[in-house]
Amino acid sequence: MFLFKELAHGTKLLLLMSLPTLLQDKKVVIFGIPVGYILEFSMLHFQVLEGAFTGVCSEEHVPTYMDNADKFKAKGIDFVICVAINDPYTMNEWAEKLQGNDTIEFYGDFDGSFHRSLKLATDLSNVLLGTRSERWSAYVVDGVIKALNVEEDPSVVTVSAAQTILEQI
Image 1 (cartoon, one colour):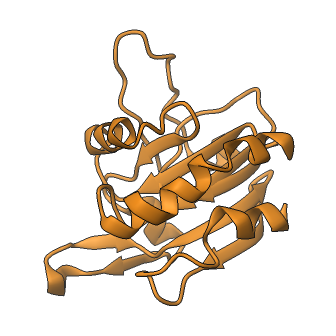
Image 2: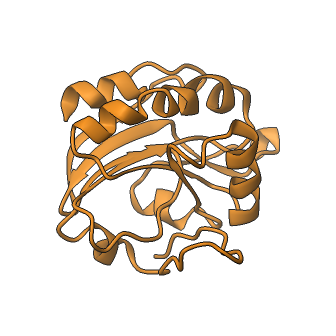
Image 3: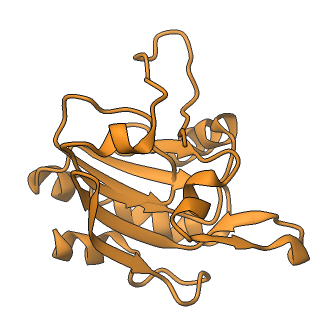
């Protein structure tokens, strides 16, 4: 399973690697968007969202992480990563619109395989959205989930917000 970030001139080379390789010997917080690199750092955070440009994600979920980037850094988290089931180009445009590139990483799980492997994908084809992620966040150390927060109602941001995961680190 691979996670992707858009590559462009002037961007550091991002290794497209498997998730086990990515998480080995690392501490990670994950929140709605895919990951794709990190070799020399020890901590990560992932946040997972339903999708780029969606209202709750853009106006509530991602901002909780952007606004708390310094707090994550103070707790030793090297990267805050947002993972969504979207292509890398959409994720890049979304990151630019949110002006979030300086505080968190944005990655696209283009086919939903990352989320399906974690049993955190949901089929919203009945409302023309296809496969989407549940709204969740996780703190991961050396590939082991230390804290996992999944929203019961994906239209709200409570347990998957940055403040919750900060208290769990």
